[in-house]
Length: 77
Image (cartoon, rainbow, N blue to C red; front, top):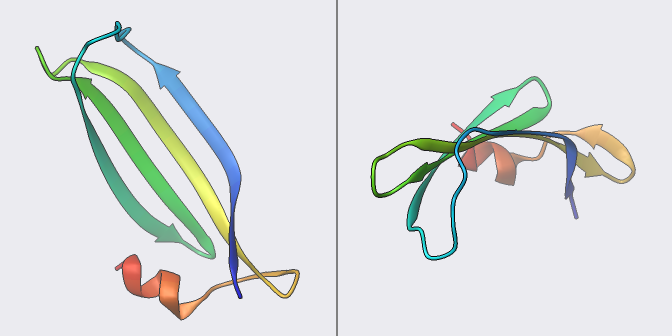
């Protein structure tokens, strides 16, 4: 069974959200080599102002080794 593990996480806080604020999350996923890269932007709903920008890089580990897995590759096209 493959294990997807976060390799690195980068967060940029742009505009604060307060309790009760509504927000929209937008996610894009792409593959770079053997890494799966998740780009996420969070916007305050009231004015569409960017609040958080995040990039999470993941790798797939199969039997203790880095690799790719067709189940993940089907999701990321």
